Amino acid sequence: MKYQDGLSGAGATTLGNPRARQQQISGIKLPDSQIAREATELVREHESEILFNHSIRVYVFGAMKGVRQTLKFDPELLYLASIFHDLGLVDKYHTDTKRFEVDGADAAREFLRSHGIPDLNADLVWQAIALHTTPGIPQYMQPEIALTQAGVLVDVLGTGYDDYTAEQRDQVLAAFPRGHNFKNEFIEVQTRSALKKPTTTFGTVNLEYIECHDPTFRRPLNVCARIRNAPWPS
Image (cartoon, rainbow, N blue to C red; front, side, top):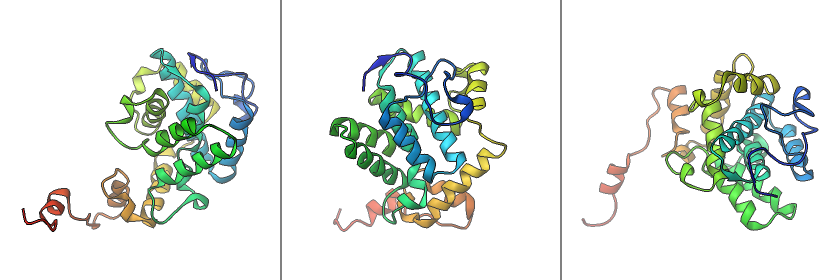
């Protein structure tokens, strides 16, 4: 895994959307190493097309931002964080007690360790995935962590949309389309996960999926009430 300034690693991908094979996506190549190919195959096996395409777009948008800001980042680690970041939303990797972000992060770290990736790099990918929905922190961490979240934010919320040219956005969508109903389908996937384990959503943006689905849903005591109800005398 070689750190680079600018474009990503060695060779165009042989996986992913056929239209994206053997070509750059607005100057960004998808990593084509053995571990990148195996990670892609694993995620494609378990994720729907909507989540898979979203995950690749997260990488491309994140890498574009890294290039634009001349950040020194490892394209392969950024790709692995991006491709795994929503795996916790699928049934095979779902747990009842952990946030979906942690489920995906755990799956990614286990995969990387099984392929001989050093713990330092595996832990970096874990952090990028676990923190990708957490506001106000990832942008101050290592570039791979910051760029993973940046890719998520632009693809889901449109944060930083105008930082990309229309040509860049069009090339990404031509290679990995959003489809005609991405917004509603993405909300549905997230809501389904949140409803399976609502207690893991408290204090996170994931709670908002439940509130949108069920306006009568009552969130638990807020932090002020919890402090006042603590067993201490003062």
